[in-house]
Image (cartoon, rainbow, N blue to C red):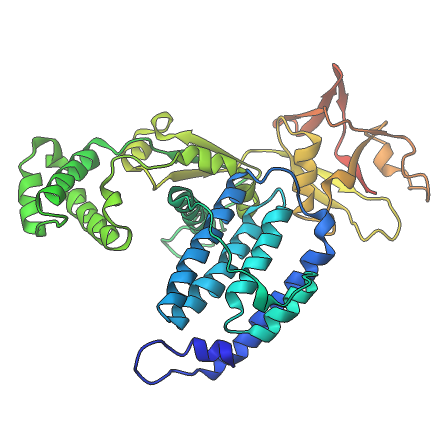
Length: 438
């Protein structure tokens, strides 16, 4: 009830009490309490050591920013805004951290978040926060707790994280469009084969015509006290430049986009370079992007290495990508363990595959595998007759050899055969392998 009342509004207008908000608030608070209990129960499994990864530093900065904004809103008695910055946005930062931290959440950051979130929410939900304070093992009441002190806020780091989320969102949309059948005549067109690899191209600098346009806009912005002239004035000036003659169809839509972005993000959209390293941000989160898109591998390259079309369209903050499917040879993977819940499946083996890459591919079809380290691959000693023999209960390892982590798989796309090299030896594996889950 208090949560819904705080969300009802801050102005002198009639309060907008929404029953759906009250119902949703109950669920939000219950979920919050259950998550705190879950973290307390799994405290020992959380990551320890230095909290210096990209997502650790982003989460710490977002917490500090949330403390500062919420404190300012409480001072102004803007309770709806305080609820927004001190609970909704705070919870969103935690959810994003949990999603992006593929290496695991850091213990100190998680419990600092719980303490800070509990204190920020206390003016609205004192009884629930007192309960959480007790769960944390605090000896005194939360009413005696000090207001959290905000540390440094790295705005550039936060913006680089927002950039990462925008790129991930755009890539998912492009992958969806890539998988849709091509439009045209009504024929029995099959959806495109799901890609296995992706190359993301990032640009250090804008293309020449965009560079000239931004430089012109920047000069007007500085000369007119932070304002841009009408589009007619801009179009007249840019149209007189010989370098832009053949790009005029693109120039004015680009100017309109820059003006729109200026209203949202401020004058930094006129900068010719980003304040952070795009390639470094993407590479540090490459595991998240690969898992999010369910791809085998993602490369991040500079646009200067791409084709002319990509170089012309790629600009800072707006990377382009190319999806592709690497060819492979299908191989059956069987699990002879009784009552394990793991079944036979078929996956493609690609040139240069390792045990780890094959096991990762296997987990996409066998969702019962949670820990990759517990999966072992084996090959038949006799790749021709081995798969045809009746398996013997309790002798899953019989007439099979464990494939080491250093083994490299090679494929012959013409003959559709697979072999592996291990310790300088070459061995055929036939069309069937065995996987065991311990």
